Figure (cartoon, rainbow, N blue to C red):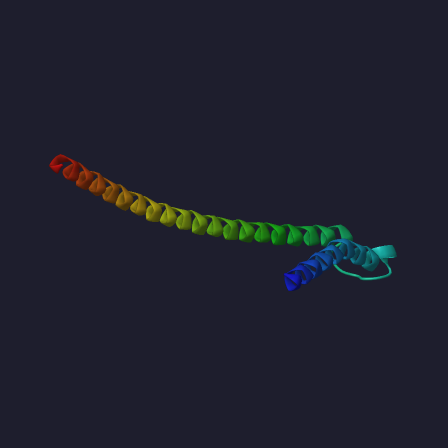
Length: 111
């Protein structure tokens, strides 16, 4: 549990650094036309950065949805099997109860 918490904390911290730090770094590179010289502007770079983050978030959301659906299917299958087991036990108990009642009725008829 502790390793999982540490891992998720690290992921969250790195994601926050990337989300907050990325635009700041892009801004510093294009500040005052004296820094980074390219054929695209800072707005284009920020747009690309946002698109990449959007794609990553969409992929992560799809992965979480698939994992959740898989667990739900496993849970439903487990409950279905347990229901079948209890139904079989119920049928068997009813058969035995009926046979006991039949035996009791036969015993009472003889006396």
